[in-house]
Image 1 (tube, one colour):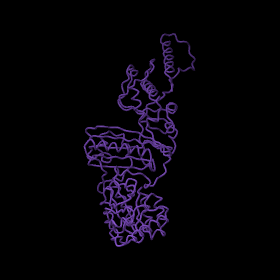
Image 2 (cartoon, one colour):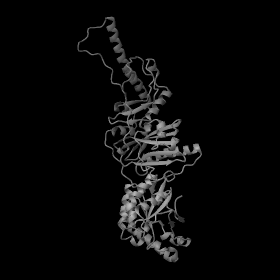
Image 3 (cartoon, one colour):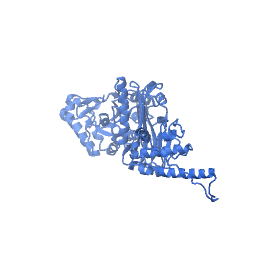
Image 4 (tube, one colour):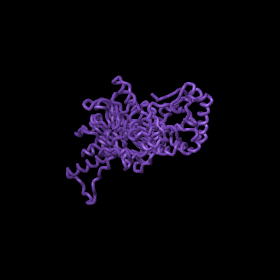
Length: 521
């Protein structure tokens, strides 16, 4: 960067030459001599950077919630698995939801909508965080019902090397009367998971230095020559630049783009008749200027700016922590298998970033060991459905214990992971059965009756329309109609707003150890 002293030297030299020419006292000049030129400005004014298409950041997971009673809609993206970026973005959403609920005196609860709601689209809407606040609130793809309430919008601002950047903007009010409007820009290392705010890309010295360079750049762009050095910024001016650093976005050329709000001015500019800016102004800070002002993470961001994006490794949905108090969760469960149809269900679950639960029969465990092992490896659960599917209430205590115990042993031997809950065939559970089994019984609140040979469209309607947040849905992976329609069912549930989870996730990460459960509500 150019020091104030060097800048003054150029101005003084130019002024002396000009004065000599005007008074006729100029010495004879070498015809090949050219006057010294201004050095390149340390920073330059450039167009505002455009967000990326969210699909550029492959393997990121999109989330979306909507609740029309509270008046909130939110979209955000996270790294696969449990990560600092995922927690940071979810915390912003939780805080926004809680604030909206407190403002109107209505507690938030996860909500879903009829088919056709379109809530299966969960990535960021490109450019949404740059739109006027009134437009964000009024857009049904981003904003709350009827435009009244809170909208949480997101944009992917960068994806290069191992670094991805995401902007989250929270707007509250109505299109006619916007209230709160805040945004946070986060950067995450897809390799380590480390996440920082844009402000944390810079050292403490950055604000004062960039104030000096920005005033100088505006002065030059206005064609003004001055012998007055840029004075140190006031605390208020320093805070203005610090706030602008919170919006730092990288460019492919290695420069960092910092956007100052409209109304930027300084006494040095006012004295030269240079008016305050009338719209936000983006400054490009080249690597030569930014290098001594960056933290380690900031330097990594610049170094990776032109590199191909290194997508994070995918993580199966079942290995992620899911907040079912924020997201509307539903657990799809499959009885009576495994069967030759079970792999198709596993394929559909993986394709939809979903996790499901199988209640397997002990007498099938050895023959389908590979299928059950795959299910567990992909983050699904394999639990106990007795050895041979009897009515347990018609058996002695010893017979119940054997049906359940032998199945637990067989599944554990086949997969290396023993079940911890069971499902009594036909839902036939009594206190005596529960005591003899020694496990919690997991039943259901939505029965699709797939075993009746229902037509595919009717089966889909039952499986998609009937669940509510916290529901446990019963199907059978031995039924051809269930296997045929599994992808359509998952699409329909996602469209309504559901997140498909396994039973452990549905119960906040820990399966029940006793009692009989029909849902998580």
